[in-house]
Length: 143
Image (cartoon, rainbow, N blue to C red; front, side, top):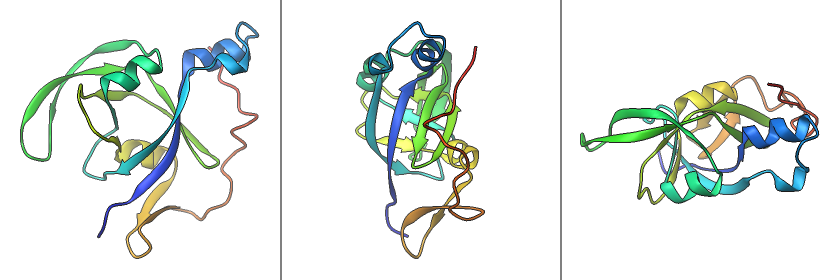
């Protein structure tokens, strides 16, 4: 199987909550579009330090992470990040790998968005079809 990439939008969910409460204009939500490598060997979302800072995320702690090459590193664990793919959304913590060259989309966010890898066509597809799960444009996040 070749490499599968996904076009994602990552958002600071605290900002999204503030928009929903009328405390922040939508244009001020810290967000970014990224191309992520879909990595079913990774647990969650993996971002680098620059993206962590750009999104204005807070660290919830640290975790020891084992990489595919069996090296180990202590990484920051972020507060939940809004991960948007097409009409699907999941809130998921991320590991911050200081100098990661690529964003990795792991198995937990894939499961949360009901997605799987189609190895023949090398793309993401809905596990239960590609029907809209919900309208992410009108979805609100409440605290």
